[in-house]
Amino acid sequence: MRRRTVGCLFAILVVTASIPSNTFAADWPQWLGPRRDSIWREDGMIQRIPEGGLDVKWRVPVGWGYAGPAVSNGRVYLMDYIHKSGTVTNSSGSRDRLDGVERILCLDAASGAVHWKHEYQRTYNISYPKGPRCTPTVADGKVYALGAEGDLHCLNAQSGMVVWKKDFVSEYKAKTPQWGFTNHPLVDDRWVYCVVGGTGSVVVAFDKDTGEEAWRALSASEPGYCPPTMIEHGGDKQLIIWHKESINSLNPGTGEVRWSSDLAPRFGLATAAPRLVGDHLFASGAGVSALLDASTGNIVWTGSPTTSVACTMSTPIIDDGVIYGNDGSGTVIAAKVEDGGRLWEMAKPIAARPQRSGTVFLVKNGDRYFLFNDSGDLILATLSKAGYTELGRFRVLDATNHTGSREVLWSHPAFAERSLFARNDKELVCVSLAAK
Image (cartoon, rainbow, N blue to C red; front, side, top):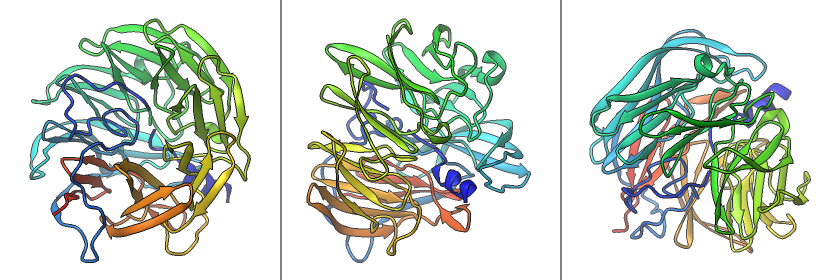
């Protein structure tokens, strides 16, 4: 049971960043969107999913992967894995060894045609090994892609040519985490911030154009799975790094630690991006959640098994004083920011009948939410303090992975060009969400 539970908690994903100067409103150039806040600001979308379903614009074959797509300037960027040998067991208590090819793909957003691909041989020795975890980050004409075993590539976004690359394991003596590297690279100003691992290098800042190291900081027994998060509070930027043992605020220019607060998630799974709300920071990981003072890191309140929401694979959204999230237990939870008190729980977005586990990813568009669950359904709904109202659903993809006896799809989609871009371990699909 513990193995199955940990498997359901496996984190593939999870941060706040400024918008690159060349990003268009219709783009989704990185994890969780242009501002990494899970908000889609494009207009002209459907207000309800029709009973007849949605229009599928194209489907193209791809390899294995948990990594979601990024969309920028009419192109889609995606990582995948072409499996050659080895057996997938998806056992949380052990690592599976696979041989294959890790790839970075660039496709046309209008047709799905491949513009270029960059590939390299890569042996995996991780748990739940079906492909890369990180959504590529596209900024200022370059794409930054981090593989499951710590290969970081900076490529020319137009041509796919390698600009520079790093190997976290060989260059920093980092040990690949049990569930692989899941920490989506963060580009802000002239730097790309990465969770690396190794002594004194839990987080490293690289020059985004040259790859030259600017600084490194923090040590921990494990680097964790939470991507670097940039917030701005009191007129200053803070780089938030949450590893296995504590959550930390750093000066993004120097790596100097401003504050540190002990906050240890179960199994080291700090995965969801901490969310800034007013003068506070909401942090949510496996079995733990807390509201912290953004200036000092002091904990205002901590959640319990019956309060707040301890997000595992999906990052929560905070809207009008309410936290909306999913803790992997099979329900969407609404809780108050002020004290963590729960307002409601709803199993329907994840499954027609209650089940013991399940994940859903939430994205806000106008006054509605798009929810993508781990069965491959896209749902349109309204969420409020009063509850959940469903406005239709559509099966986008089949679930092609598994945890225990349950089939799952654990990949966060992209929303751009009035469309949904989503993938499983067989195909990438583009579905129109434009109002007719």
